[in-house]
Length: 210
Picture 1: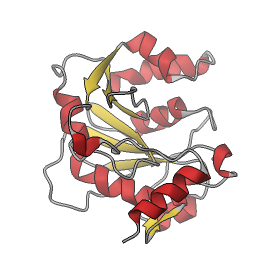
Picture 2 (picture 1 turned 120 degrees about the vertical axis):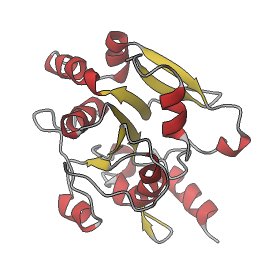
Picture 3 (picture 1 turned 180 degrees about the vertical axis):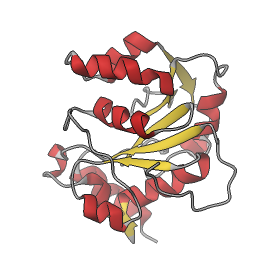
């Protein structure tokens, strides 16, 4: 299976494959490839990988460009196949097609402060046989950029894409979904802070400096 090996001995959720979604056009960033933007001494995607990898069996990457640069970082990028730039649903399709575990945890490539217990808490939110998607709630909003999906969701994703339904909300209307509360831990105040604009990125860069 293509993937980036887990670099730490931290106990992962062995039932779960991780997927970093880096397949967007970067329209609000002047067309920049968000995952490759530098944060401190390394690309943004590497920060996300280091938070996600200890939590899962292996980490996949969905990307539609700059594959050589991602390979140089150790990834085996998956593109959107017949649905290029069709949003996160196309990336989820690619990840689930490459996944050989019962669950897939997908996260956006611009979440460098991802909770280190994200996978464990989403997985524990309901019995394993409950096949609904699981989405964290940060106290203000649901963080749809992070979602735990069962492998069985692939069929619904394929159907939605074939019929031009590209939104996660359309998928969840089919599969059902669970809200998982991440609002009570003060340490998670910025855990889901993402980078949608150059101003967001500049602010985070300043706060990450020693």
